[in-house]
Length: 165
Image (cartoon, rainbow, N blue to C red; front, side, top):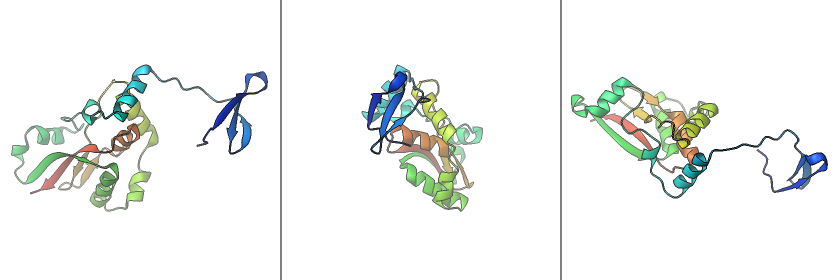
């Protein structure tokens, strides 16, 4: 990514950008038009919005885990709780569950899905499903959603933790 410090108009309306001390042409540069709701939500997050506006606290996209959330008493050997953790800790827990290192977890993040989750959440179209870490069943889900929440500006993200008692 190139950091643009200044801008001026060149010949025939072509934009010239000052990049590292040199003026560069950019005839093919596209303007990105974002809807007002998107920008309002980003400002709302910056001013301290809660994650519950963007994440479903009762849905994980997995019927079996939704059952655990609705009826935790049916699973006496498991501790089921929603915790707020830092995204870097989520990746560390994913690495522990899958027996890999954190670098591999970051490589598995799909940027187009992160952008899609973020765009949908900020447009108020849909809330994201709850990310989960199941230490008993050695399952994890929600790596891209956690990355989207981090990109949106949340310091901590909600995660469904399932551990043995």
